[in-house]
Length: 143
Image 1: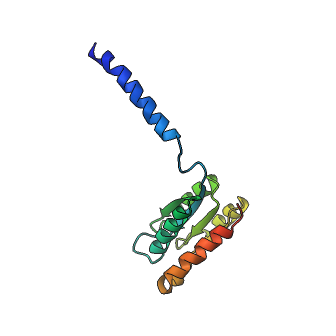
Image 2: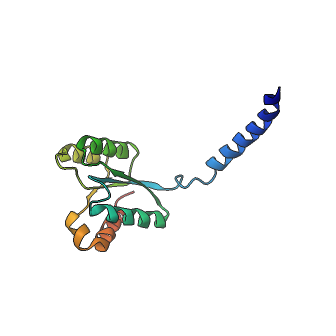
Image 3: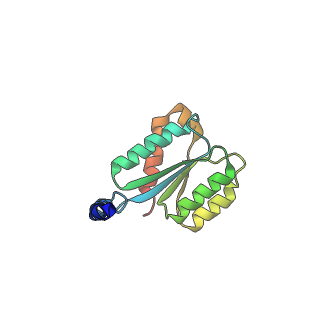
């Protein structure tokens, strides 16, 4: 009997939560940019990827899927496949050693998605310039 008293409150709460989730979602008018890194936070390209993600988010036109493969080629291949399936505007990548780069390039090109490789050396010597280069390549990629 006491449960019946709470049912209307639960229904109202569920309706309110559903309404909040559906209004003005930031992903409605944004494009996906995938970032597929070969390793983890200890590698020099990670801070560059984070700065790129921040800059893309500030633009308000993009949502970013930033993935780390942990040096696992099979995992990175799967991450890139998901980015392709989600129709990314562009995919920024550092390849895992031993990954089948040709397979990933073919897959991404077949989907007509620009594939932008991070310059690891530039991440060490001039990371801010690398962020700008990557950002500009994404912005100039076809929509």
